Image (tube, rainbow, N blue to C red; front, side):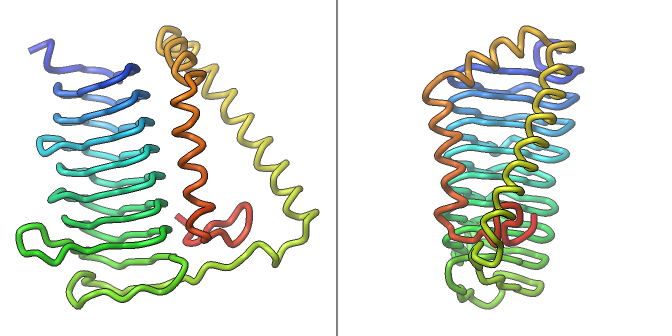
Length: 241
């Protein structure tokens, strides 16, 4: 039925967003709480305080997410996430997970490889919600962790964090300027494309961005990287994701 099936990309903003209809395209959301409980045929780009990929959710491609907390109960093919807490709750990441967070809780399955930069990684060993990575785990934490046998089928690679003292102040400042310039150009291009395609969504997005609470979410997530202490330099976090 037409009200339960969108044959195009979907753009949403608001406080509490629930996607309970099939999206045959990409999904773009900026909200306070986002719950996905349906099939997404393309990629999902989400920024929110809380993201829930519920039990009936099936994201056929990538989930690009920035949030305070992210919980995966359904199925996602690939995950790219910046968050405070990331939890796989009886869910399934079909391929790779590339995550920068404070705490990673794996109570479900990652089908291929995990690349993680965080403070702590927890595997649930209970049979009803056992956490497992079927591929390899490459991770960086303040200190090396120990894992029970069987939670990672492949190899476990630990990359110790290093400091930015290896680079001169001048080099760091130059990197900041280059990165900032590249970022501004990228944002301008995306902004113009959005203005051309969906001016209404762009206007709503602007209102959401200037909201103090949304700015707090962005700033909080940026601090996560600093809190984990895993940056090798300004431009090269560990691990490379």
